[in-house]
Structures are given as C-alpha cells and as structure tokens.
Length: 507
Figure 1 (cartoon, helix red, strand yellow):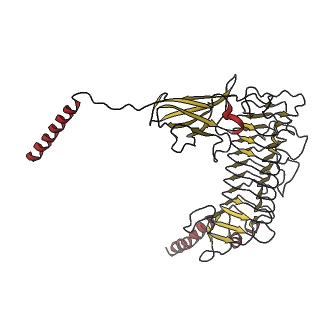
Figure 2 (cartoon, helix red, strand yellow):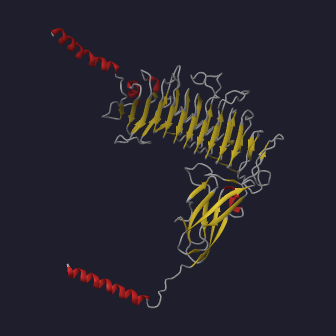
Figure 3 (cartoon, one colour):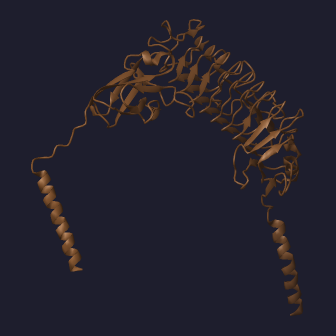
C-alpha cells in the first residue's frame, strides 16, 4: 500500500513536468512605447522576440535602425503599428533613423515569415530593405500599409525565397525605385500601391533565374512564380512606371513551367521612359484595363520574344510618343482606345513603333460611344439613368472596369446643361463595368425641354460621336381633382371623425 502511494506521488510530480515540456511555447505580444510598455525601442523588442511573436509599436517617432536579423532564436515575426488604445492603425508610427542604415533591414537573411505593417519610414538608405530565406524551406514576406518616401535609395526593397506580398503601400519621391522586389522564389503580389515621382522606376520587380543568387537567396527560379499587380499607380517617375523582369539573363527560353505576369487596373502617366516595360517574361503577359498616358512609350516589348503570349487589351493608350514599342509576334493588342477613332495607324493616334514588319493584331479597337437613358422623356425633377458604352468592332470589344487604378478618380467626367448629376453634377455612379462597358450617371433635370449630358475622357474621347446624350424632359404633371372629389373627401373625413367620437364615448 505504501509503495503504491509512493508511485502515485512520484507520478503526480512527474506528469505535470512532462506536460510542460510537451506544450509548445505560445506566441507572445510585445509592446513598444516611450514609457509603460515592455520596451522603449523596437530593436530591444526584436532582440527579445521568439518565433511567432507580434510586436505592437505605439504612436510616436522612433530614431533607430532595426536589425531584424538580431532576433534569436529564428522564427516568424510580425511588427504592427497600433493606436493609443492598442488597435492596429497604420500611420501612427514614424521610424526615421539619422544614420546610414535602413529603418528595417536584415543581414543575414531573416529565417522565417516576416510581416511589417503600418509604418512610415524615411532614410538615407532604403526605408525597408529585407531578405527572408529559410535553409531547406521557403519564407514569405508581407509589407502592408507602409509609407516610404523621400529616401536616398529605394523606398521598399524586398527579397524572398518564398512569396512576396506588398499591399496598400506608398513608395514615392525616392531617389531610386519606389517599390523594388529584388528577387522572389514564389509569387509576387502587389496591390493598392502608389509609386510616384521616383528617380528611377515606380515599381520594379525582378525574378532572377535559377543560375543566380540575389541578396543571399540561393537558387531562385524565375520560371516558377507568377507576378500579379493590380489597382496600383506609378506616375511621373524619371524612368519606367512599371518595370517587370522575369529572368535576370537573356537567352532563357520558356518551358511552360510558370512565370506569368498579370497587370490589371493600373495607371502609368507621365513617366520619362515607358509606362510598362516587361522584359524576359517566360510565360503569359497580360496588361488589361489600365490607363497609360503621356509617357515616352506606353508599353515597350523590346525583350519579350520568349513569352508564350502577350495580351494588351481593354486599355486607354493615348498621349504617348509611342503606343507600343518593339512589338512581338505573340502580341494581341485588341480593344484599346488609342487616342482617336482611327486606331494606331491613323493620324492623331498613338502609333505602334519599330514593327520590323511584324503584323500586330490591334483590330478591332475602341472607336464609338453609345448613349441611352432609362427613361426618355423624363419628368422634370425625376431621375433617369444615362448610360455610356465605349466599344468598337466587329467583333464587338468594350472598355472594361476602370480603366486605371480604381482607387483614384475615374478617368471620365460628366456634365449637363439642365439639372444635376448624382447630386453634384460631376461624378459617375459606376465605373465602366465589364464585360459590356457601361458607365452610368443619374440625371435629375430641372426644367422641361431637353437635358444634354456629355461624357469627357482622356485624349479626345468626348469628341467621338455618341459622347453626348440628349434626353427629353417634360414638365411634371399637375394634380387636378375630379369635380365633386373634394366634397366626397370632406364627407369621408367627417364620417371618420364621427366614428372616432363614437368610439371614444363607448369607452
């Protein structure tokens, strides 16, 4: 009996220890602020972090350069800005180091998944310069809600042996590129970003071939990952708006293993060289529903002979010295607005340059506007929806949603000489909606007669026939009571009053 009690007692002591040893260490939340938090500097919090931890940085300006590689042991890490209540809030924290290093950097590569969320960074070096890589595995990096402006290098510079996701970021007015993905072994996703006024490129993405290494990331296969850029703007950069390189080396041939590039609903205006400069893409290139205006070249395909296909469809391409430079035989450039009704071979349209006898498929293009009203004629003071459709053919092609970055103002405005449009006379209810290309406004005319509604857009779209809708307006009908109806109404009211009186007396 005593022996049994001893065994039970030993087990009672040992089992809890075994449970503690077997239970993984849970991720922690570490706070950073001037006083009252776990740490007063971001670097101290990184040094103390374990894999999976979240570092919450409270409002303020921090004069420091943070080495993320100082985290020991290695593991996943998230850094996020919060407001005074501790809720994630972008833009509440500025990190501005007055030395030569980036505000956030890695040397050597960070071994784990990394997320940087919400910071404002300034530096004489890149604001963010990070590489993530895990020996024998893949690490991903997420940069979101970050503003990197006025640096003397790239605003955001990222490398990874896994996926790279950059969203809702601003990389403007930097000496080099605004957003630079300098190698990725997986997919690259850039969405809802702005990269304007940089000394080199707005957005620069390069996927090196397997024969190269990039910033400590070994054996990156440029044929494996896809690049998707959407809802982003790169304007007024000294060189290219969007420069996308599928392989670091020439002579690489497509083998069907990946490397597709898709760019949709983006805006590239006023860049010193090309709006879009894709190079050595081994798979399919698609540029669609974009606004490409007032660049030296809209799209330069100088190094695109290896692509499996090139689609440049449904865009506004106008005001550029050259619409498409150096076309390739794989190019399909149908369904674009080229700046005039005659297409790229007509005077006044953006030309297709340096064809070298390559037949370019650009027919049909956008050449007409059709307008219609839901109610015509409409009573004064009552609404009617007026629709405009930008199309061409045959076969029929339409402009799709946008075109351009959907976060900004529409590239179209509307006006009327009678009444209001959507309450203020100058906005649209909806962007052009794929697949049938309808842009619509709500008209409420003031007076009888007609209401002229005119749509204006880039590079002479308002000059096209059909860009003006004329809606008939009639005066609102006045109510004239039938003879005797007033007497009947009065009798009815008296009867109701008497009924109410009876009911009250009964109670």
